[in-house]
Image 1 (cartoon, one colour):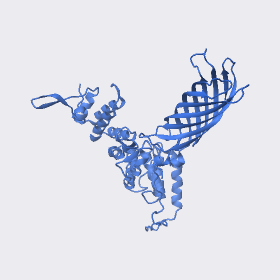
Image 2 (cartoon, rainbow, N blue to C red):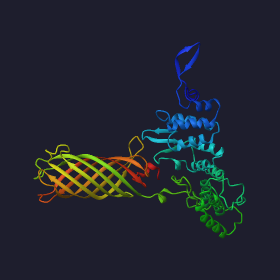
Image 3 (cartoon, rainbow, N blue to C red):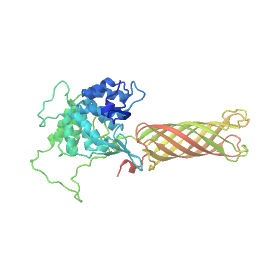
Image 4 (spheres, helix red, strand yellow):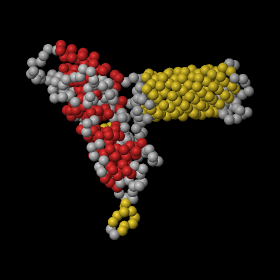
Amino acid sequence: MTALLALLLLAPVAHAEETKGDVEYVVVESPFHADETACVVDQDGAACFRAGMGWYSGQGIDKPSKMQAENLFRAGCSFQDVDSCLAAGNMFLKMEAGMLLLMPKGTVSLDMGQAAYFFRAACDLGSLPACGVRGDLLTNPASMLPDPSAVARNLDADLLAARQSYSDGCNEGLELNRLPLPEDDGLTGVDLRSCVRLSELHQAGIGVRKDLKAAAYFLERACWTAGGERYCDAADELAEQAAAIEPSDGKEKPLELDGEGKSDGRKTPSARRFESEETGILSLEKGDKPHRFSIETAWGARWTYAHPQLTPPIAGVKIRVGLTAWFGLLGISLDLGILTDRPFNEELRRYGRVHGSLGPKIALPVPSVLPIPSATWFELGAGGTLGALKLNDDEWGPNYGIRQMVQFVLSSPQDRGPRQWGALRWEQQQDWWPGATGPMHSSQVVVVFGATFGGWGPRWKKLQGAK
């Protein structure tokens, strides 16, 4: 079986032999031959979507092919299949299509213009939630980037077009307050997000004239939409506020500019506005939580300095697991470790130690200079240790001490949610035990691997577009 789509959507590859001037082509075997044939020959958009989902999920093939999936979704969308348009648009919002790498910093550039194109097509084909997504893209393209370290291209903010897209999604009707609301069942054919966005735009006067009456109307439509019950009280409050304001004389009022003559008092849209996939404009600065926690494992080398009870000094290995609770840039770390100089030879072992450590940390973000999307920072920490120690032929005895550490951390670029990271750590440690003539000083170099979950983490503000 052959994939006709490989001939029509991808560049053909000429065969080495030619017969009577005709070029033979190399085609790709595909388990989705039937749907691909229907997609290309019959212009069946639903078949394009099915074949695209097969390549996307990798079912029945050695590995998925996002490029094949994108081509099939594009074809399906051109044949007016709404599912194909949505699938193509979502690939851009997941950074699975439309990416360019900008050198020398390795910044990812994402084609948000193509994403808006596919969501507009889906909106025109009747997917009202797609209208709301397109409205978010037009309000601020950067707000829909899946990674804050990436940049948007091929799309500029257009509040007028965004307002129209939200209007399509909310299916508002031609005149305010003219569309009757149901008394029992929720509204159908209405996108909840679009109605809430329209209400917020009219409340704040962003891209439109500030109008609490209109804001209350749109929030009431959200209230009557399935899943929007939580907006009912807010809609009533807005309606009361609108009724309490004296009627306007209907004349256009002049703008009240500030001292520099650059502002009419309206709020400037934030670069990180639309954080909620469902509803509501959430500000990152106000809505995100700084609480997060990290888990880690570490391996490294340790050596001691001259000590009367350890002659000559010893070197060994260190294994550690730990957990850190972070509150913004400050953290509390707890870990457990094992140290020894002969991990696999008990007869020659001179030193063994198990311990736990507890202490504070501080994270200091630094600009990332690597040619890949990443976040970097230094961590400084100190704390006490408590455990058990065995020297030479002595029995295990209690051991306590203090330590200081600094480590350089390289993390995946997300500044919230799950992310992975690695670090190189340098430690200094002082230990005491009963009968010791003085503290034992040691140094350690440790390689750390970990994962972080929760709220925002250390990030150099300039790299995320903050002004």
